Image (cartoon, rainbow, N blue to C red; front, side, top):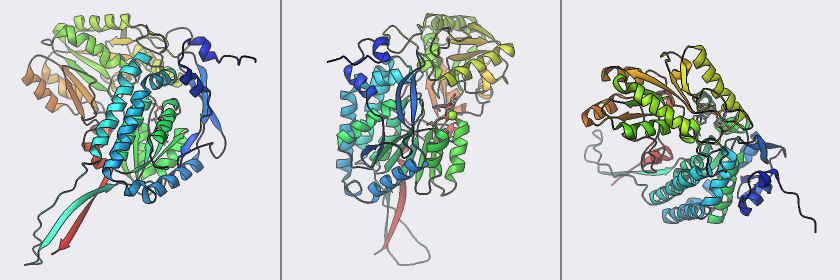
Length: 507
Ligand code: NAI
Ligand code: MG
């Protein structure tokens, strides 16, 4: 017997779990109507390991025709078969079972995520996977609690008549869900969890940069016992598969997470059949440190607010406003945190920050850094790509930036923060609110009145006080202004996946 030659990733990353190796080497197809099938065109595209730039796997490239098949499968599962007649309790149990399966495969999923996305596997294991499990469990509980109201009505033009009126919440229908690459598995969970709890069916289009963890999740969805067609998973590009899903006339709702620019395209595409739209878009979140803050906590937290996930977070705290009295100390502290961060491949247990997800993102982030320097801002630390293979950028702290510069106004989506001094608290609301975004904000102070007053003034969907990047399945998340429409998580999301029906009976 001749031994099969080892794949490059087995050589590069010794001790990869066997199940991960065999998953990577398996044939990656799309999930439609409960079956794994090749795309209609049979075309494939590669997904890369961003730490080396090498090809990890090839996956099926879905086109508009595959979208059409998937939508048909989702429509059929919504209207026929076991799903629409399943009790809420049975639906909840399936979601809970999926949570158990994700938890049972947590190590494997974390490794897949780390290889495909670049994030340290320890982070994927500690954050992405447990949050996905928790989200599914939380939403499993909601399946049995989606209630309407009874409503006393008067109807002045039918004197003497009596009525019973009530509302019911019904599934919004076939949902097209389009997700990004920064938290691939977690974004799939955020989208699927509420849709399934509400009894919808789904066509999920995953990001072309990171298709793998959702494909493994698809296998677990089948194993959990969801009826065929309830969840359909497509790998493919935004301009083709994504656009076809957003404009499809038989899709009732589209939920999108990604750039504000594509968010606008989604809205236009959805106009054809006026499908419901929710959007979770970009951010340029202010993180405000007052002189009276507990600086030993605020400094490392301000660093992590932007450097977590390599800055590839829609809510990253990228504008660090610091009261003048402590500006130098905070900037030096955050710069010191940045210097300490060990860059490396996600597989290495020593790694604290991995590469950016793709060459495109590397170029994009480096372009912003250059614009910052050309405009006269100064990087106290970082300010360039790391030489060698992979898409690494050094954690970067800018000072001396002007308010209208692109590094202050635009979403960079890399490990780049701009520190800006202020003299008086009254300067903060106008400065913090001066971008097109309104996703999140941070406030650091020991003065609770000051904190609450400022929280009220900030136009942001989430305000963290003396903490940052705190997420929970029960806490709604979403954006003001051009950061989005609607909310994810919490019970708020249930409204986004249900239609409200009023029923009125004359007694
Ligand atoms: P993107 O918005 O182009 O991609 C996100 C998802 O949308 C992917 O699944 C993609 O295939 C899909 N998509 C792209 N064009 C589409 C279209 N015309 N119709 C339907 N779906 C489409 O984001 P991209 O290009 O990956 O990253 C560019 C920038 O977007 C980043 O630098 C960052 O600023 C922002 N972004 C924000 C995210 C967030 O969490 N809010 C996540 C990812 C990116
Ligand atoms: Mg794009």
